[in-house]
Length: 153
Image (cartoon, rainbow, N blue to C red):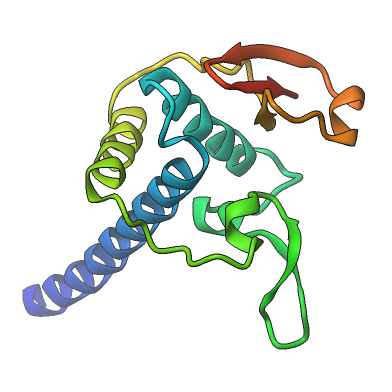
């Protein structure tokens, strides 16, 4: 009996750790491509937007599903510039080139997930760089600007 319990726990714990690792990587990639040039607060805020979307019934239920949410072709590939986070569907490689910046992004994600930090974004589900003004922004409530990003809900 104990060996059956052990196998059950081993299988489920491995699955759980695999899902956690996958979520960490998805969140870190998003921070890397969206906010690697931002201070820690900016990177934390970008992570919090993804997590706010996970909590919302209007978005997918996992960080990876949120990060990779996109309009796709029948082949499954994303339509260029028809995704939630531009880096995913801009036609460029999605592999980090700057290891140090990726490690910093990963550390910022781990900080958000492991320490009780109040939501810097005020519950934001959206953001954009302050250098652009997307059409949708006028229909949202602006919550805060952190570094080079403006956040909305």
